[in-house]
Length: 156
Length: 380
Image 1: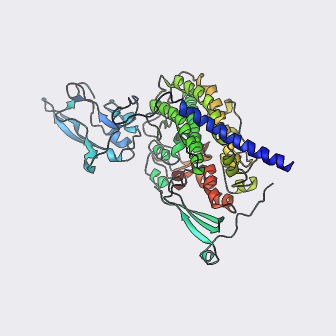
Image 2: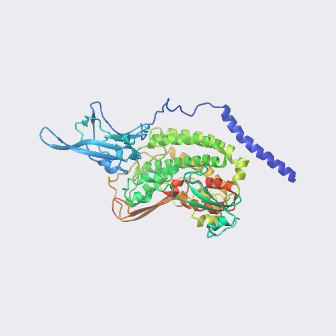
Image 3: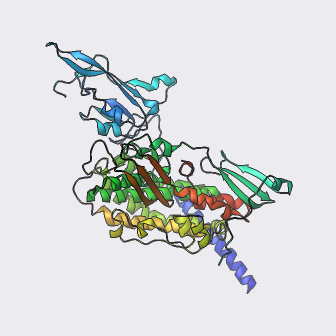
């Protein structure tokens, strides 16, 4: 009786191992599709909402919608964004607050999306670029508004 | 059934090494541990006499940081605690702020939240299953687990914009509406995972080596599990009924049909079984909700600057690892006066010494795997 149980135990143990090996054997012989990607050569199309970095949207006339209201700066939990404003003088002699420099510290950003939610004019958005490694740390501090850009007409 | 020992057993000191015991350090950077966990183990031969976890290697003082952040901003920090159930952590924070503001969130947001919570739980359990098998020495299950987890990550990426630290739950609802592909992709995932979950049992659960490593190892009785404050699958594997979703339902959990999985095995294998069954329950919950998401707003109207009234607010949810709680003390301002997080990992880790005592050193990693430790959650 003891011997019978002993042999039965060994038989069941071997059977359980073979069952697992059968599964791995199946996948070894049935490699239907390649699930890995040849990353640097073939780049995956990332979804639209993917949070890679914050960018200021510029149109073809090099105009943006940022009024310099600093809502994004206040919404940011890490001090990633710093808005430097200036005063534009209109032809009539009226002073108007406008964006001078949109400083973005990528090294501090956690991609929480709170600045984009806070922006009243939808001037900024998240871009899909995810390859952020640079050789110099200072390169991570970016100026988002392009040189010579100005605010779009009609945006308040 | 099993012996119940007093928590206040003898703690080791320096004289132990003189008495013929060996004291060795495992971690903080050891391939067998998850994250930066430092264990000081006292051994007599191969038998474990005492395990003492040393924490502090990944302490970021999140609770203190939250005191200077507003009620919208502090939520993102909790994604960095238990990064495998970040959605559920964010959910708890959002619930706590909503409790203070006394706002009712739309039904659509509730449904979205629960579906994403359960998807996160599935992803977390899948990663645990793969990592636990790898702890024991089986490499292959890790790849099978990640094959399915990748599908969930893709869904998260498309809808929430991130794969791990989503920050999708905001006070008042969720950040964006669901992606148009969401329902289709979740249904595809459910169908795919249902056909694959049997493979999990085939390759690992029935395996005789795995069973011998797990059964009768890491025993903790029901009384001890309660007194150590264990929650989640760790406690339910010892027969403690502690599912917050069932006992104190939040959102719409009281309208959903699902079972609380309880196993009276008290050992590592019981905790394994609980998680395997929970995966099936999570699938059941998602299946009930995915076709019935009501139309409407995904976010309730809230003020730009949130101010909680003076008082204390506590909410708790069930994460993949156990009970997670957020305790906010407000003085009426825009930032909290004090925030305390009750993380499941910390209490579960405290029971490790009790579980590991008397076992062989080779079993320690298997026991740690069965508790499902996430170190940033323990160390905050």
